[in-house]
Image (cartoon, rainbow, N blue to C red):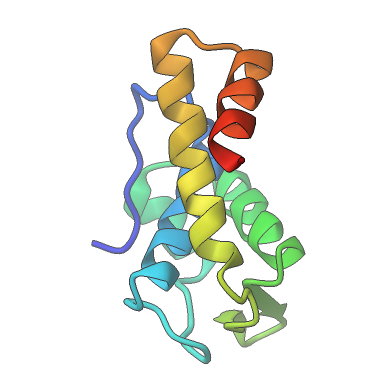
Length: 116
């Protein structure tokens, strides 16, 4: 399944939906021109609020990963140039740091140490 959410996760549901799309794009399960399900359809499938899906789609639109068009829905643009993979990995890193009890400042320090 393309979309996965974990209700027990501390990550917001909209971010989990967006992360699913980023992951699918980075793994090439989604390609430019592919359509995503309508927000109502996806909300029903995942048993979440339609506004949660719309927020996820809005986030992806702001990142340049999808284009939202009337009557055409959400379409993958493919203009992320690796951004989608980095965003998915960052979301996983943040989720893992929360589970480990690592705060944002400590996480930034860890990333900076590994960046050099």
